Length: 259
Image (cartoon, rainbow, N blue to C red; front, side, top):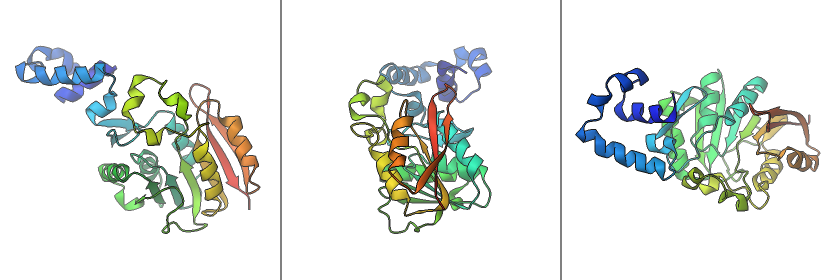
């Protein structure tokens, strides 16, 4: 289904076939004004996911608004990598946004406890709605907080810490495609070199990650070597894998806290 078909089938609440078979009856006078306004929003660059108020990730539906980053297909690599390594019960998701990572893990894993934090109160509210939408609200504790400054996080408690942090260099954001301006800058801006949050994540995770536990991070294009250099400054970690995405770009880095 292409973007136009997705947009119109959602507007008219019908499948792709009905869209073509009943096109005359669907586009009546009552609907014409609404369709026109929706098309203007899309022409102006507003992402289709925000217009529809939803998107799909890992085969599950998620509500999205401009308060949260739109889940990307590349982030599915992060989830798939975490699934491959899960051996314990406790997972921490940092910067949960719409909750797509935590909720997907909760849907696909049994006997798991997940804590998901985000600095944005509105993001946490949306994540809670998505957990309820996907029937996993009892498996995830959502917390409004900033990185590791949260008293309720258990020290040396987590088997895996996952995160898709902001990793775009500040000066690059305004050069990206127009759709990006609709997304929350706080979820995109990784500081001068795009690596600010990685430095905080790697340093802070030592306190909360069990020995032998894993830190699994999504990264941006051409950031792999820089991240490896950051990890080398910490004797507590060893890098065990770098995972490429579908475009052969190094997308996820996996590091183990040394026993």
